[in-house]
Length: 153
Image 1 (spheres, rainbow, N blue to C red):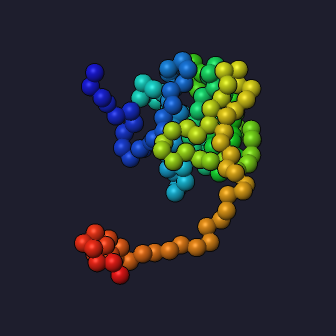
Image 2 (image 1 turned 180 degrees about the horizontal axis):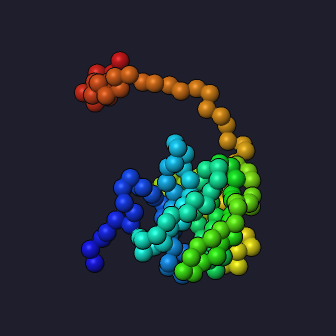
Image 3 (image 1 turned 135 degrees about the vertical axis):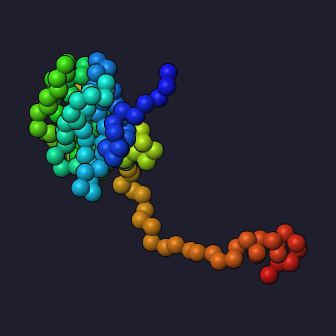
């Protein structure tokens, strides 16, 4: 079929996730210079609802559609939702907190088990050394060409 814009401009959202019943889409969009999580009807007609209250990225529905999870800084947040012909959600609650690696490619950086009891998140290693020194090499291409021509300096 022919693609169509789900939301009119300038409400450009991204990282959309369809609800398990296929009626709703959760996505992130910028509001007042901050990413927030919204839910809107997938049919495209109807009001979008703000779900996050203090920033949010990477929305992910539970498999049964009763909860929606998202990142907010170093916190994993969750809201209880009611799906159907209308949408409602509880205030966000803290699910987990800690340093975890965030997504860098638009995919959700965490996953949830089928029963919703556990999460899979990637935690950085504490032993990773801090970067304390950077070397910048100028004119490296001309030096490489001289080396290839047999003129080693």
